[in-house]
Length: 90
Length: 389
Image: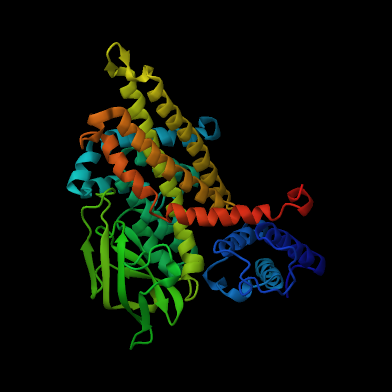
């Protein structure tokens, strides 16, 4: 169980999407597009995305969270934020 | 720039500059000649709390903000680039460990690093691998014991390796990148000092050779597969902040030495500072100093605020101050003339040290590649109608 409802989850997704689109030069980003396999992100983007998520959602990404599955796509990053918020709230 | 600092930050900067005037500047040329920094000087840095200044108090650090960390590096950079290098690598390892270490690792390693009882070194560069870090040849393998790793390979140009008690070593484990803490006394680790560098001559550089070095798996920082993508960038971020600010300090040194000389040195009836050609050099130096100050402050503030732009701001600051320091050091020698070419003059040391700034923590060309990619990418976000107008 998480502490975010669907509306909040969509808000998380929109926020992350805006950041990604403002950081990399693509016109469209699908919810499940793989950011790392597509070669569209530069070498700094991984830590920038992590920093953005930490700052925006007041989450700390730690050693246990080091898993490419957590950040590989828009849906994955959203699910990660929801999970972390759920743990904190729960 | 003073108006951007808090009263506490201003007071700290004054404290740092006083420390450097008293304990660093009078001796930096001697350290440079002898190619080593005396142990009591490192102890003094430790006693002052400088070596663990950015680490949280819970680990024995000072808990200073990143702007204050930058001011410390700037002040030390005015006195000695080599000495500042100790702070650089200490921060690189400490902050990477703070971010990605386990609680057990942090509890074991951070307190001695914070108190300066131990110096750490960031072992990334290899004899055949500088900027292209994806091609690391240093190899980790699983040991015969399930909880150990066997390390083979070599590292080169490792700052402070002559002093370090622990190394954060980057290599590959089954084709995945790994960062692992390797204590100095581990059997099979050979440390060979590197002497006679052009600059950073007292920076304690060394070459490391690993011959079947056995380390506990528990010393892995982060997880296998994330050393280059997550662990190294945190260290390099602090390395670049430190180097940017150290370069700024060197630039201030060039400026202060130049204007002081220009004000009193006479050619016929005029001082050097009355000559238009010299004024041009000093104007460029002073303007670069002002610009670099703002760029470094912006980088430190961005890191303090933990915003994604911090990486870009830090790259920009390091790129700018390292290149400006090279220009300023060249001009400072030019202004001093023959006396600036002698080892007794700090500007001759600045001239040699400044070039190193353009190499460490990513060369100027790597910065251009990264920043160019970032800026072009950002331009790509401008609506098509604006771009085509």
